[in-house]
Image (cartoon, rainbow, N blue to C red; front, top):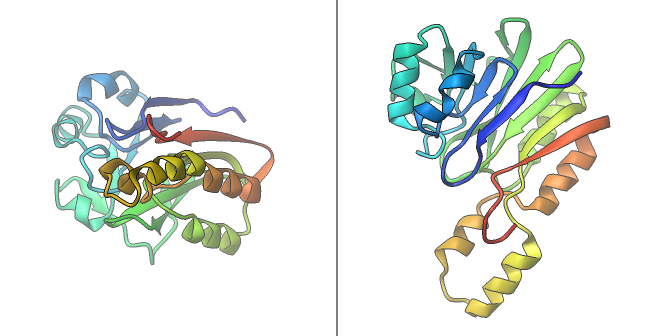
Length: 211
């Protein structure tokens, strides 16, 4: 199966990725997302940071696409009464004919990655995390491997270390920010561990400075 997907934006300037009829995040201007929203039945928001949930875009989606069902953390659900807060103790949730699991991933605010399964076809979407331990645990519990991996690959650790050495321990906000994200090496390790034969990797949230 080949997925129909569109990476509208992925990075600190804004995130929105449509995979089939599911939109992940809405951190882009509404005008850039609008055409894809006609294909969308569900919106899954990872966390509350503005590059993942643009409040003006969210307002436009709830007003102009009222049939799109929206799910996220309880913190994001505070932004709009149309958002269903997910409790990870009560999963999966059925989105039409697909199953969805939300799993908390390590970030500086409550953040979810999402596992989607239809029959025996499975993919994962996760960004803004600094390790994959909770994702690995879920996949082990479910005993599944992945057809597609949509995963953060923010930086090359060697580039980050080299630039850090140049700063000689001084605080650099760009280096500090990247260290809270997933490296490309860790992304590739997760992919190698969990992919099916022939599985595909789509790298997300690539740093312009350190990738």
